[in-house]
Image (cartoon, rainbow, N blue to C red):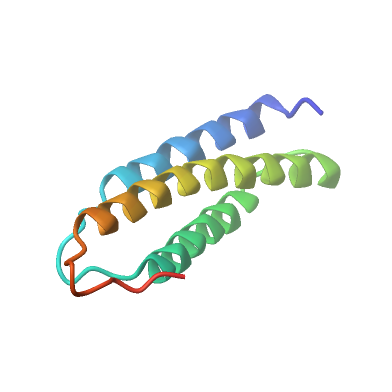
Length: 102
């Protein structure tokens, strides 16, 4: 389904803003577990979807489709970020101390 241009613009803006948020993250001590980071990132995705839901245009079917597209795109960005975070945690493990993981 082709989305309304205004919804395409919102999806694009949401993705850009979410990517900025992810790129602003600085990993410092104390580090949080991979599982906790997954929870944080999931909360961010839900926040963005909830925010943009209020701004979607068109009939309900159009709005639902656009929100699903936004959710999918944010999930892709989130997964990439979480892979980077997992790699970061692995690179900072101490031989005698394993960081918690899920």
